[in-house]
Amino acid sequence: MSEIRLAAESRTEFGKGAARRARRAGFVPGVVYGHGHTPVHLNLPSHDLMMALKTPNALLVVPIEGKDEFVLPKAVQREAIKRTIEHVDLLLVKRGETVTVEIPVLTEGELAAGGNLLEHVLNNLPVEAEATHLPESVTVSIQGLEAGASVTAGDITLPKGTKLAVEADTVVLQVIGAQASQADADAEAAASEA
Image (cartoon, rainbow, N blue to C red):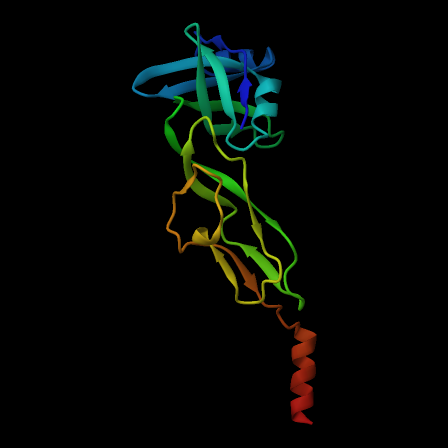
């Protein structure tokens, strides 16, 4: 995963009025915390932050007290209708530190014939990895899986240096058999009565 550098400026004003002024000026208020440091309040460029957060578990580099620091998005608050970013909490991380994140589970291949459905029990898989080498996603082959089959967390091949942060027997994907429609059930009932 690549590092995404964001320009940020220190924030000295607080409260709703200051946050609104920052948003009008094209910034998103944020706070950086972690490693026992006092929280650092920043204004981050709105558009650059929005583009960076399109990548799952984006590793951001922001200047804090004149030094570039690695941070991970921990909580993102969005406006309910427009979905613009209102505030962001960032977690300070260090190179070599192991962190727990959730990565998207992607699938490839086709299920066995018969109208089966794939249920994503977990859309994101909790894993532990080094903070500067976080995987973007994990891909699982569902080729030929039949009704009743399931894929557990332990069945998934993880990238090098990544460990599961859930039990290996946790179900991630399962295949559900096709449901008979009401018309089919009525036809079967009529045939058995005749």
